[in-house]
Length: 398
Image (cartoon, rainbow, N blue to C red; front, side, top):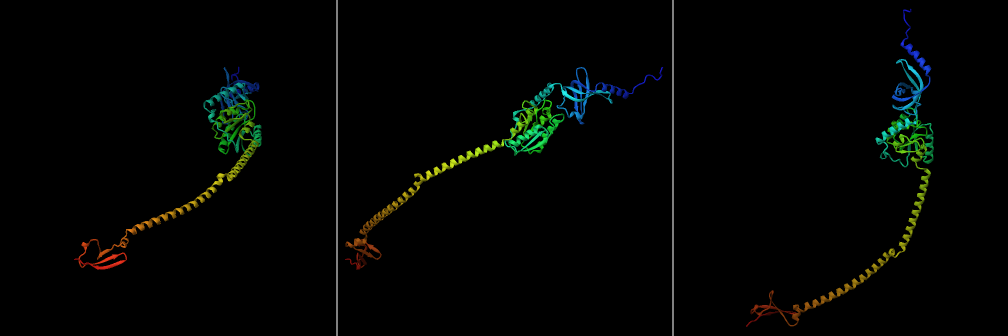
C-alpha cells in the first residue's frame, strides 16, 4: 500500500491535458446556433455566445478575421460558425475559436433588414419630405466607395463622357466586411466637414446580400440622414435594395446610373444651346425684318407725312389770320376815327364858342360870368366876349 495515495494533477496540468485532448479531437467544426451576448471589443476582437435550446458555448473571433465578415452579427441572429474548439486555461472553459461566421440562410439577414427598415421608417427617415433636389449643374461631386472597385471606374467613365468639367473628390472606404459600415459613415461625415461639394454618391458594385450588407447597417443610414449634402445611393444592381437607398435623397439602380442621373449630358447641352441659338437668331432676324417693314411703311404713310402738311396748313392759316387781323384793325381804326370825329363835331356844336358864332356873347364881371342883369350895377366895368374877341364895357343904369 502506497502511503502517499494516488498521484494528483495540478489544475494547470489537468487543464493542459483537457486542452490537448479537445483541440486534437475538434480541430475544425461547424456549429449552428443563435448569437447572444455579442460584443465587439475596442481591441477589434469579437466575443459572443452561441446557444440553442439546451446548451451554450462561448466564442471568439480575432480582429484579423473580423475584418473578413460580410455582415454584422447581432444578438438573436441564427448563424453557422466554423472554427476549432479550444480551452481557455485561465478560466478552464472551452470555446470555439471562430474562423468564419455566416448567417443561417438569407432569411436571417432579411429579418435584420426588415427590422431596421421598420425602425427607421417609423422615425421618418424615409419620408419624401426629407428628400432634397439635386443641383442641375454640379461642379464638384464626392464619391464614397472602394478605391479599387469597379464602381469607381464606372462612375468616373460616365462623368468624363457626359460632363468632363465636373470635379470628383474620392473618400476611399472598404465596402464589405466587418468595420466597412463604420468607414462609410465616417467618410460621409468627413465629406460634410469638407463642405465644398454639390452632392455625393455612396455605393458599390453588385454582390450577394452578405457582400452588400454594410449599406444595410444603421450607422450608415443615420450618417446619410444627417448629411447636409444631398446623397445619391448606388448600391449593387438594379434589383438590389439597401437601407441606404431608402434614406438617401435619390436611389440609383447602379453606380453607372448614378453618374448618369447627377450630371447633364454635355453633348445634349451643346445641341440644346445650338438649337436655342438658331431659334433666337431666326426670331431676332424676323423681328428686325418686321421692324424694317414697319418703319418703311411709317415713313411712306400719310400719317407720318401729315405733320409737315399740318405745319404748312397752320402757316397758311397764320398768314390768313394776320391779313384778317390787319383788315379788321384798319376797319376798327377807321370806325373809331369816324366816331371820334362825330363826337368832336357834336362837342364842337355845343361848345360856347360855337354859340358865340351864332351872335351870342359872354359877359365877364371880374372872375365871374354874368348870367343875369341883377348881377350888375351902374358903373360896373365888364368884359364882353364875342367869338372873335373881347370888348371892355361900362354898365350904365337908369
